[in-house]
Length: 82
Image 1 (cartoon, one colour):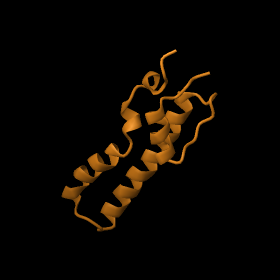
Image 2: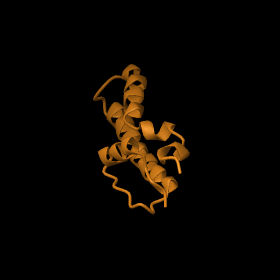
Image 3: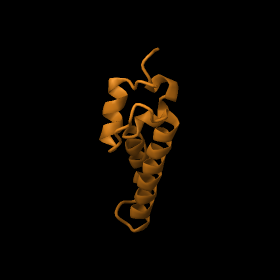
Image 4: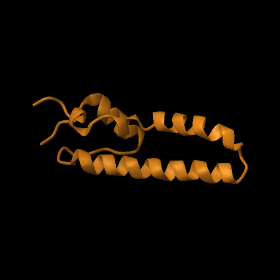
């Protein structure tokens, strides 16, 4: 069974995910990606609604991406070495 690194577990918990020991990293990454996609669509919709100007969108996307750092970490690095 995979053992998740403590820093990865903390980041997963920040997104409301608490994996069981047998939860596959691919499944968790898929869930985080789904959350990110919802957030990015919400951000786009807020821009379209005029909450902020279009030139601010790229900076807000970068800030949002920083909240989802797990998406940039290879899944094999989510686990403690055997």
